[in-house]
Amino acid sequence: MKNQKAIYLIIAFLVVVLSGCDNTEDKKGRFLLKGNEKLKENDTRSALEMYSEALKIDPDYRDARLNRGIVYQRLARLDEAIRDYSYILAQLPEDSLTLFQRGLAYLDNGEIYKSQADAETILESYPEYWKGYFLHGLVQEQFKNHDSALDSFGKALSLEPNNPDLMVNQATIFYYKKNYDEAIRILTKAEQLNPKEANIFNLRSMIAFENKAYEEALDWVEKAIANNPRQAFFYNNRGLYRLFTCDLEKGLDDINYSIKQDPKNLYALRNKGIYYVMKSEKELALRYLEDLYSKVPEMEMVQNYLEKAHAL
Picture 1 (cartoon, rainbow, N blue to C red):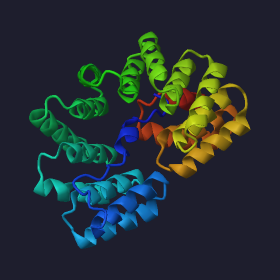
Picture 2: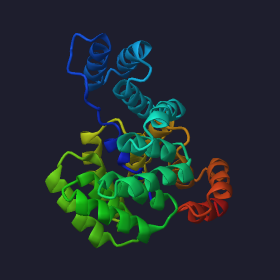
Picture 3: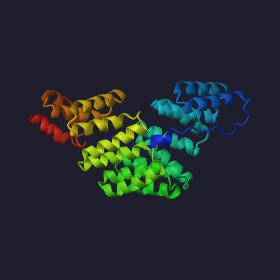
Picture 4: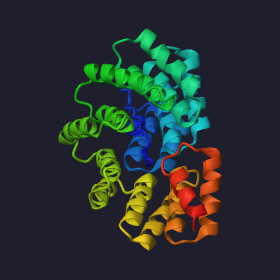
């Protein structure tokens, strides 16, 4: 896999609308509405302030706490998000949406077994709730249980058949299994449902790269970036494809940009090592690739380019 991140974040960051508060003169309700408006404007700082003001009035205000957790999650402030979700669940232990959000936050935070527990709670309490199967599929994907992930995504799609985000996750598993034809078939249907979903085009670019169609891969990832210019891993993929089309310096620019946005992205560090191999800069290539090989020897292309670096 060339740095395809799970796209559940798209679903995770939906704004929870005001519920149970139709009195707009109510002060906490006004703060919630203002927070929702700021979030729609992508002003996350102000949204957090508004939700926090509502919670000063009523710490048990579920909608404000849930929305604040979602914003924290969007900002990768995962411990704070989990704290807000857990506060709600201490009072409402079977709140399905909060369980789903916390499960996603646990997954992002590397707490896979806790995410699995939330998924299982949802499935036990709400067997017809598609998000429970979706979360379970994401957990199985992390465990590399691809057949189990496909089964869960399939069950989710049986309940939510026209959800393009689910389709992209399902196609991603087929990509892992190297069943590119099936992945493309699913992505084509997903694109018909949502032609602006950037992850569709990113995954198409990854499939093209695996098929050594490097120019085609570039075309697809450009579409991904055009539809969502904020995703660092799209730029990392474009950087890799540029290396393989002999545009080394622009490729490095993309890879460095991706690292700046996400310094922990091991795929970007790998790609930088590949750049130095292609530039015949042995010492720098070994610095990146040997460290990666010690951490993730199974990562695609690492061993191959490490051997090339030693041969320089």
